[in-house]
Image 1 (cartoon, rainbow, N blue to C red):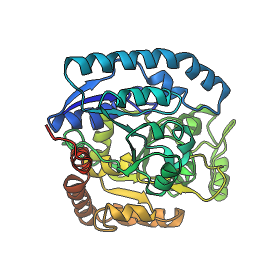
Image 2: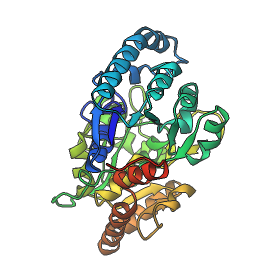
Image 3: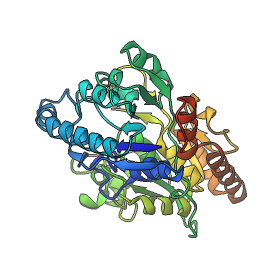
Amino acid sequence: MRVFLAAGDRPNEALPHSRIWHINLCLSLRDLGHEVIEFDFDLEPMYANADWHNEKQRAFSDGHRPELETALLRQVRCQHASRPIDVFVSYFYSTFVSPAVIEEIASLGIVTLNWFCNASYQFDLVSDLAPAYDVSLVPEAFRLEDYVRTGAHPVYFQEAANPNFYHPVDVTRDLDVAFVGARYGDRTRYLRRLVEDGVDLRVWGPGWESVCRDQSPPLSPGQLARAARRRWLPGSATTRFLSRGMFGGTLSDADMVRVFSSAKISLGFSRVGPSDAPGPPIHQVRLRDFEATMSGAFYLLEYFEEIEQFFALDREIVCFSGEDDLIEKVHYYLAHDAVREKISAAGRARALAEHTWQQRFRQLFASLGLGQS
């Protein structure tokens, strides 16, 4: 099939070295033998200004939407005229284009699909556009009814990983515990507890600079002792608990895979959205759940019920519930190499058998009655 793909390389500007969506979406579709035409347009500024609740961001998207719409329709029409496009796949928010643009693409006989993986806490940022598509690809099972209520046509389409990129590399497992991901929600609380407990931790990702002790004056032994008793470490403006050498900035995609192979334990967190959001916490399956396991990591994940549909607990991954459980399991698995390696091997085998993007797209296209060549 000919697939027109309109998606940025990365989810946001905080990951400047990443091409995560190109690796997972574009390359996986090409692996299946499909011809993929990528939208030639810089979508990154639109992703950075996708929140229509924010007046400044909405003004930006309103001002740049016409340019995006014109370029999109021009390129789709041109490609379709040279040889018919079968499927249009996008990663669009409602601020990107009007529903009429998607409907015009569909009027050419092209099946339109929108992939969106933030609806767990940002459904309102895609709800106006979703009904214009033939199908909305939804990885959050609990949001399917919300899509239906808008008049959209959702299909449950879980995240995955591309095994041609996410695989073990030949390095020594010389890191005890590693976390790769942005600082938000209650992640700070968990990682601070690990450091206080003496765990040798390494952290990469946006936002952790603000909790690095090296940015504030060194603490005296007395201050350190008092901070440990209070379970926090004081800083000039915020709690600082990461010492020199614990934080490594943001990683490239290849370096992230290398960390998964270098760490004895790779941490994962399932809670998403702002920590002060009203209502109960929102948890969801993450891209990282498949990237880490497929890369051969021993994956220690914050528990939530849905993950059991994808991995067998204590056999393929291990989950923790709360700070005390995290501490206990970190120490146990650091002390039991053979058990840890057996679980990581089983997690990788499960990810390869059932959780590749190639499998997800093959099953999706078959369910929609779309050709495979």
